[in-house]
Image 1 (cartoon, rainbow, N blue to C red):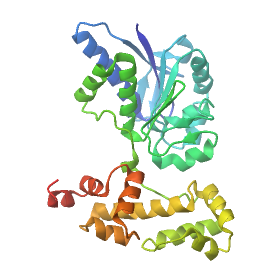
Image 2: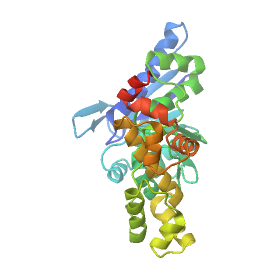
Image 3: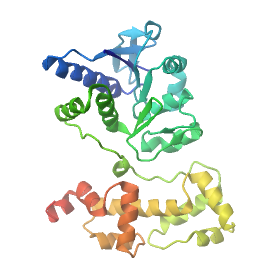
Image 4: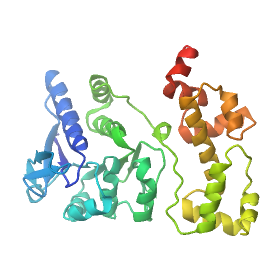
Length: 330
């Protein structure tokens, strides 16, 4: 049965995230027809106007249909947005009731990367989990507190709503949808032909931790700065609370509210971020870096590093430090 795919073309859309889904779904149709099978997808670019200018007018996309022309669809794809995200959502306000209406009529909805902001603006994600780009995580949580943003995850799927992690990780969501609609074999073929890594689960190796400081709690901000300037020290939460004359339980609540991390999580993430940078640019071995960021137990360091980044310290070093990889023969 033919599946109707609607790729929205919002104002302020990122061009690649409009073109890439179209390319992949059309490509699967080509693969099927080459094998003597009927095409599976009807793909349409749909917008609020017949032509949508993107990237400050550098590009324009001619849509196949207007919103009012689409009576029924199986899957709505929301591309990534660019520019100021609050402004982008306002410019695309007419898309929001349209998305809600078709979801209620049975369509599934998939947001790519920062397209999650537009999906969240519909209210459909309230009380649900969501993936998006790690770089805009703090802003997403501020704008949509009723949505649970899951750090690091490439694909989140709940009740016919799909979202993907940052940047090119949306290819993994597209492959996931190909597998759902056209089968595993076709998803593998698409991954091979487009040179994509299938079944990638985490964007954690790519994330850079930048402590959330857009808050007004000055003692907590000072505690963050203390942690960040004393990476080699073994900092205890009790010490931090005492230093800033705040009871421990109250300090922990305030810290979590301000930064979206517990003090312990924040300390770990700051230390691991410092370790990552050393692995990227220095020739230090694993133990030297471990001691530099305040760990004395190798097993604990490896466990925390892998929990945060998704890979081991040595795999991270070999991935991002070409000199180190050559030296170890990797």
